[in-house]
Length: 222
Image 1 (tube, rainbow, N blue to C red):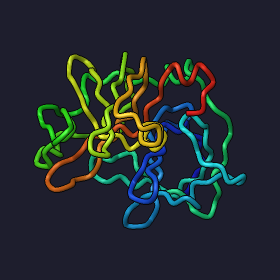
Image 2: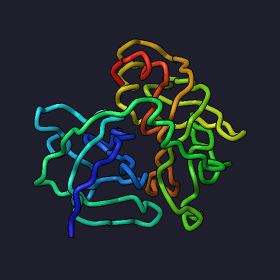
Image 3: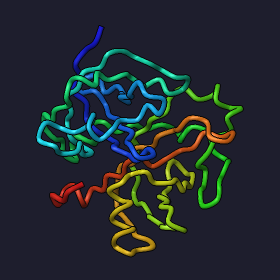
Image 4: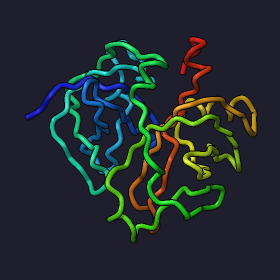
């Protein structure tokens, strides 16, 4: 039986030509990743738009109807959404509200494996059984954004470990690629880190959303 939920959108990230949406349910603070019934599980432009035609933004409170839980291994947060019920924007949260959603994991799953351009950004699929979830919301003091051969990486330090993760946040991708900047330093920020399914023997970590304190508190459009 389906149910209607309100979640704080904490990622509207690129996934092929569609999007991967993720957020925390108001009240329970449980992660929810609404997925479609298509093979890609991604959310299309038509499916995610509000009645006024606008796109869900990170920190929006979004109302949607879920038709059932559909966990897939460590991606335990996956829920099928009902595509016949249009999503609605019910409000928006600020920085202080976001701080109450902060998670403080001891690390970002398993470290010690790096790809070209990345640092601690992948996990051997042979160790998948050691992973029990796929979404984290962490706070960092600073983020160094670097564009390398058209690929954007977020460099940051968390709990004594360095990370460089591929960015799938289209807002920051556009800011750097259209602005012609090869790098940009951000101050205190939250990062939504997502762990993807196996790809050529590895599970990759992505910076699915970056939420900069200065940008939010200045009233800028995230």
